[in-house]
Length: 380
Image (tube, rainbow, N blue to C red; front, top):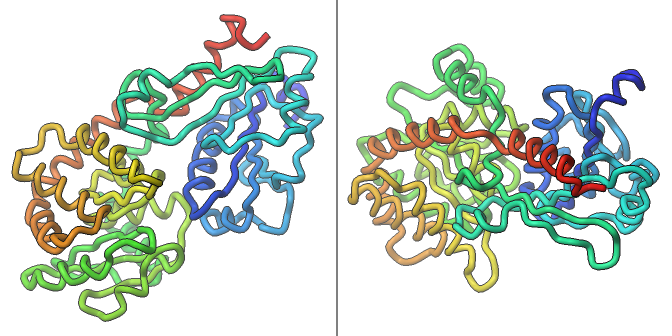
């Protein structure tokens, strides 16, 4: 890459702290990859958890403080050179910025960088009003802008890259590609009539109840595909239902796994969005928060997602999602009702996927948002 070529491109720095699990780095890596994909930006990802990063991206060397993957620069948190300040600074999920880097941003002699807090996804209605709001720094001449991903036209959209729907359709229509996936994962291809459920959940998920519900459905063949790391694989070891342990895979392979399965049980934020884009019936285990505020976030998405469902199907969906996240005594019955409703849920999931694919994705909206700040003189 020549200096002249760099001069015509904005430099973007993304900062990510790995709080727990893999959600933070998963979102940051997906955002960085999409920003870097068209070659119009020079992107650095600064992350404090290279060990967690290496789990979801095998090309990452956890012992190297600076490395390049597909033209995207990855830097360890403590190795950042604060003398190089980007044109656009992304604080992923409100992670905060190093104090020395903030000072360097404030001291930049030319135009101040665009500073964006790329926040958590939410379906709640308040996101429409808070998306894009400024937040002046209390002591430095800097302004941070909040960017909220969401499901409505007044939000930041979803991290769904262009062409994703076409890639999914091409994959599911190519039996050889699906068979190759199962070989790479080290498991046999499904037998005729066998259904597969992808299970990526937190350790407190009621996976035993799920296994019991599937084993009771004697007229159906179910198997559960579980990554060996980061989920409740051990609890399914009683063999009431076939349990297929697979390696933890990168983001592209996880997409293909979702496309190849019939049903997806997902968690957090990133796998939740990818299951929607896969067009598969899904059960979401939302990240737990204090005072049970996560249940309000769950209900807000349900209100949007369930539009158009028949009342009996909507009731089955609502009961299972509530049971899966709140662990009441009627979980077994809720699972049975939801499995009975799968034909309608499949059609609904495909329709929802089409709706999402028709919306401008998050990166497109983010780039447009940053560009709009400059003509208004908000970065001077």
